[in-house]
Image 1 (cartoon, one colour):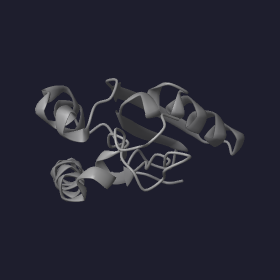
Image 2 (tube, helix red, strand yellow; image 1 turned 180 degrees about the vertical axis):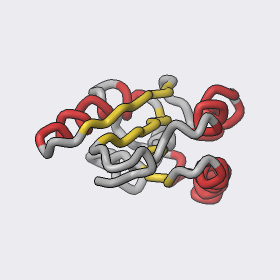
Image 3 (spheres, helix red, strand yellow; image 1 turned 135 degrees about the horizontal axis):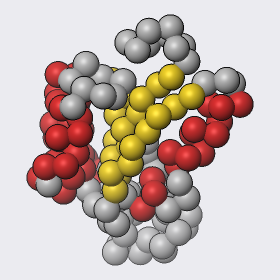
Length: 131
């Protein structure tokens, strides 16, 4: 994959999320999958347990890392139930980041988490079993 680093197979990716991204090392899994295809991915993970994208936006580290211009892709993972509980806030959060990501010359990627097994339509606290 050609990228702004030249003809190298390298790709630089920033992951921003919470335990759904960090717990099972999603970035590491992606790196391993790319390696099978002969690609090398450099990555950084910014995560906080249970964090929403708004929490990451309000704490300056994610914005500062994006503005560094070191990344070609920025993977955003919203707090797992927010897109169901408050879709408008979810869109607002993604738009905040997307503008900053584009300004840094990168592309936005959304990592959407899975629904609750027994009540996929319900946010946590409204009958949803923790998965």
